[in-house]
Image 1 (cartoon, rainbow, N blue to C red):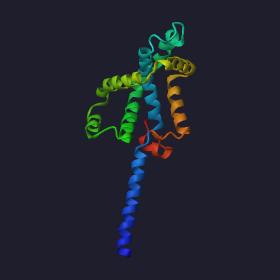
Image 2 (image 1 turned 180 degrees about the vertical axis):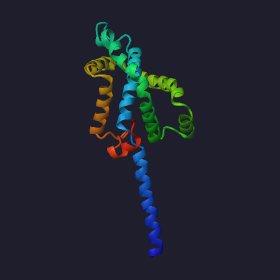
Image 3 (image 1 turned 90 degrees about the vertical axis):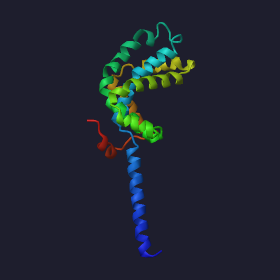
Length: 184
């Protein structure tokens, strides 16, 4: 291959590599946004579990006696967590290819707060559909085990576990990549 052809080929390869690296970096999720998404989704998950497991939770169990008190701290922080949860949702949808051009345009053009009721209903329904009757006892046990944690620690713990286990779907941004999308 002559030098005349080699130089443009190398430049094109370098550009493609840089664009691929940039696309991969943009497809990652900020750990704080994942934490916010967990905090935001907890009341939705709790409500879905209450609906799906209504006849399966013990009358004297955690969900019946202390569950609403525990989940109240998450409900109180949903407004604060929404922007990060929304960024997580957009990043995750883009990564999954789940946002076609129309969905992506809708997410980009609508005000975030206008999408909240839609997101709440969709996420709540998806979670309720995933809960199987035989998992109700495990859900109650898991929530009871986590209940000593404040809401922000719960989201932070799950984001930390995702980072430590090198979660791939969605991948968590490295510290260098996250600085460009930092929440605060």
